[in-house]
Image (tube, rainbow, N blue to C red; front, side, top):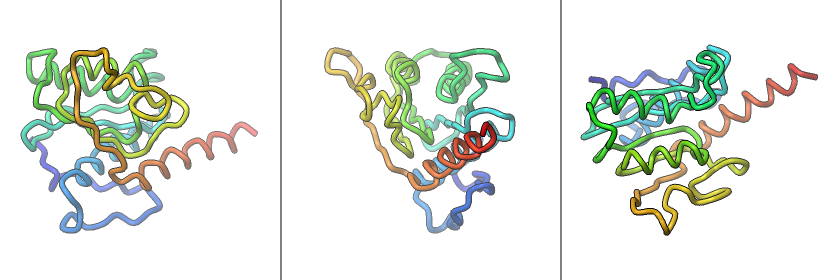
Length: 175
């Protein structure tokens, strides 16, 4: 199993990375999610990455695969949820935490509710499609029976910079 100490640093970001000794455990896991996001970007996908941790151990990782898999549901969060379910042999991921670089969309937030995650930790808000706090509240909607803790803003600057740079480059390429 991988641990936060073994997380591969994100080398493509413009912001300098801090040494592992200076980072919290949450920041180390978010760096691992950023590594997945960068791998997605290198494969031509929108750079979103996610990891799922249980009891301090990495049990699954995912990155956007929509284009590669010709699958509109292959968001990083869904890919990670599927891998975690397979790893645990259960569709319920109780006691698990998901780290993802951007606020999840409605589809992913709904899947997290069904998976019964303990906690969601995300980096940057998504003012256009965020379904945790920004646009709507799917994750902890008052009529749903499962509630999970949400922590936002972990490595927010690095996460939002990766997304901004990706879309800026994409816009420049289409002009």
